[in-house]
Length: 174
Image (cartoon, rainbow, N blue to C red; front, side, top):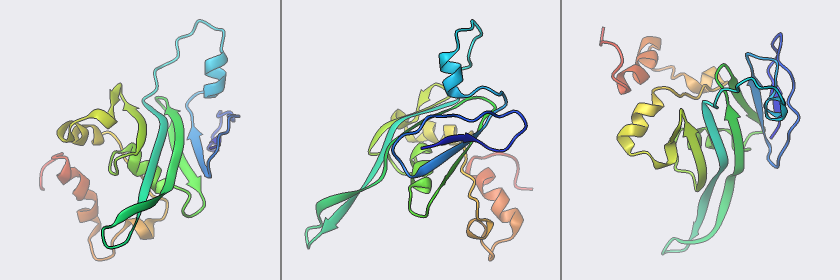
């Protein structure tokens, strides 16, 4: 995993890396990286992360035979960790099949992670009841890069925009 800022006027490059083929791009409101924040000797107060992901794993079983016995597992996401601080934007980039969408779906708890922890605004999403998780999702979203894969040509734009608002009971039908 590589943390590098998106091109912006005052963003500074991070320097940490771990095993993975998914890159993380972070655009920050300040010029300090997480590494610089952690090693700072100053007395300034660092804000708490908005989202903390620790050792997130998502493995899919490989089933065979008439009884659908598990014979192996595919490690789609294996040990991903990152923080998102207030004012930051995070982008996942990588090759096709590298686990970008699976990571996003596991963070949002759309797919239950095999293990790991996702803390959003101080709440561990992996331990929330479905109703509480649905309320938390109102404050999170994934944005896909390819608009042709994201938009359904058979639906009007207003229907597409209204769908998440309807799901979360935001606004009125008009």
